[in-house]
Image 1: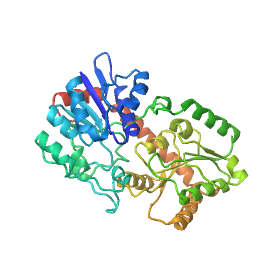
Image 2: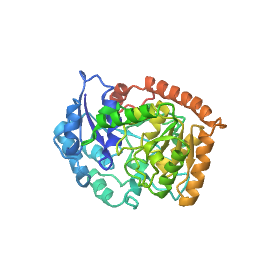
Image 3: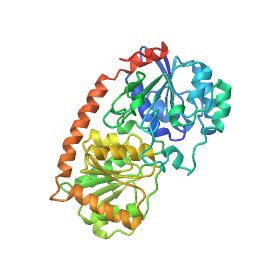
Image 4: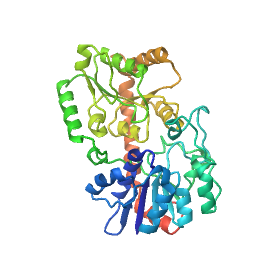
Length: 393
């Protein structure tokens, strides 16, 4: 079977990782696979032994590039992660589509907060106009334009990179026989394609820093590659340092005292498995796949709200499960600083039992991830898609 993998062209790396993980679940003696990615990633993927189509996948030409990929590679099945044009490509090219689905794209779901946007909309501050470019693509494919993310992600099969306890399907979709939970679709840090990033240097810096502060409670703080740091997050990191924590962060903090600076490590790129295996607390924005690292390494977390429902709704769910604390994004700098101090103290103070309980609950979630991963059978889903058979496993 020939399988074409297509990530979201606007945020390639987080949407490429699950596809690489799926590719590694295949018996490549039985299948031929190919990846459609921007040219900047071609060399990195080829060095990993992956087949890459000689097409510079670009956002402004995504539909045209995907059609060219189908014409050149002749896949039996398309597998994409949040491509906003794959719906039309699959229909026009008459190819079965398997897509990655997460909170924020489940049919029948609505955000907890109606003022929140999807993270892919918030980057440029505007709503996605599904009636604009989508209409011309839809006309070519003989379809009506999708009205929302759930419709844009309609496919023969949906793979959910998580577990039922966290990626909660709305009631109308709960028994959908075409949705399959896959557990964690992650790969080793060193295999994440990040052109120009010194992975070995980052690992060495973390190892040296953590060795120097062995026995000191440690935290890792990140807002991913899209959200911007501000004075509120600076104050949060300063407070952790003032409490005696060692902190590794993808956010630099100005005006630290000499003693605080000695316990602070700023790295623009941090290998996630490497650092999460070594810290006591994780501060994050609940971005795509980020929370999976906390579960894998059983690290309690404080989730910083971003006003993006695909992130904040998951953060709220993690708080319900008792493994994270969620701070909404609507607070001003002073209110956020006060809320963070209060939340941090609840998590890490000597008299608090929350951290120990959260660690135990994380073990239960990790067990569910492991069991879900063991049950997931990507090979069988490819056969189902190719045969247009949606009988539940």
